[in-house]
Length: 395
Image (tube, rainbow, N blue to C red; front, side, top):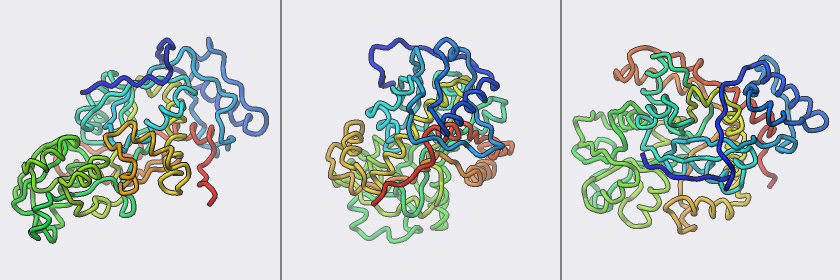
């Protein structure tokens, strides 16, 4: 893994939270609900927060609607370092925005980013506590860990592909596209395909098989070349691959460099496919920092949606993304494809259940998993109670 230090609270000491009980959590959330009706709820004293419970919500009652502000809730003190495993693609837009706009700092958090190439690479570090959370696919390794009794959980949506919103596409090398050799899915036969972490039981495998099925093909009909997303454009340029599943921002960057041509959006092949979710490790999941992280994350996700769906403050958001991704030409952001993100962080259980069935059918997992029990909505419930429901900006 490639480690990248990204502290957003400069010069503050670091700390970690220990496990916290649930009764004090309920007290904190009730105070928050009352604060929504009158004065802002006061934060627990710093000494109390050291051993206080994570602020879980009573999901049997409607979530309290709080003002769209973080006023009255003090940052954690001392600040807590949250170790994140991320892909460092545009799926991490929320993280970049939250860093630059100080949303993590306002919650008393520092983030320590570690680049991972996928879920298979992240899972061992997530289960051992080397990572607190990972923004990756809920892949076979995740479900196998659940079957081994590890208390991992899906905390929130991070991005899914739809026909209208997709950050991934199957691309062709320009000379292959110009030759007219590839007109429909069966024409992929015999081509060298660049694929990120194939045969590891991730969403990449789901998408690869769905693409090939469109053409009545199997993996034996193509040559699979394993490539990380940042390396794929070089493989296109050098002629190593004929086609490849590439993601933003590398997709637009490669297109601009003239080393690839978009062919088919993955959103039309696997609609509503989650490409990334937020997975919480067992120790981090029991801390107050896990809830605070979700507040900062959803604030940033909403800024992202405001910019790219409704055009509000887009130039400022593009400035942030250009500072954190390889695409420095800000004009290119108008050409990029972006995954759909839920402004309240909600995850659709039926889509996760469909992935479980795929992994079972292919032998990546041996036992079924109840996807509905793996999604823990307490974190997004808390964040939405703090921030209020998302409201699109006025025209």
